[in-house]
Amino acid sequence: MDEGRPIFLQIAEQIENSVIDGSLAEDAQVPSTNELAAFHRINPATAAKGVNQLVDDGILYKKRGIGMFVSPGARAKLRQRRRDQFAEQYLQPLLAEAAKLGIHVTELKTMIERYEEQR
Image 1 (tube, helix red, strand yellow):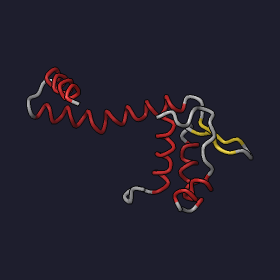
Image 2 (spheres, rainbow, N blue to C red):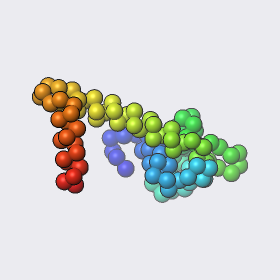
Image 3 (spheres, helix red, strand yellow):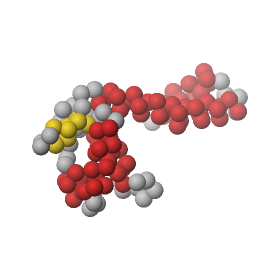
């Protein structure tokens, strides 16, 4: 766990990552709050807060008396949200710095392609 971020957000992000990478498919049941709490050695209320955040976001839905499940369309919704965040967190600063250095977008594209070839 990351000490700098609230645990409930880390729990929510961990479930989101499982949805995005496909290890939790749409309509699949997610671990219960008690299972999450036991695994991470945290209070069940903290785990529930993370899970409920995903319910509020439409990523998970409740089946009364059964548990929480991944909502249809959750993967696409999460991927789009992460793409938008990616643009804000990485592309905007990258383009701003490139502009300061006089690097044109086409040159930047070439730099990225070269870097990718070297990997």
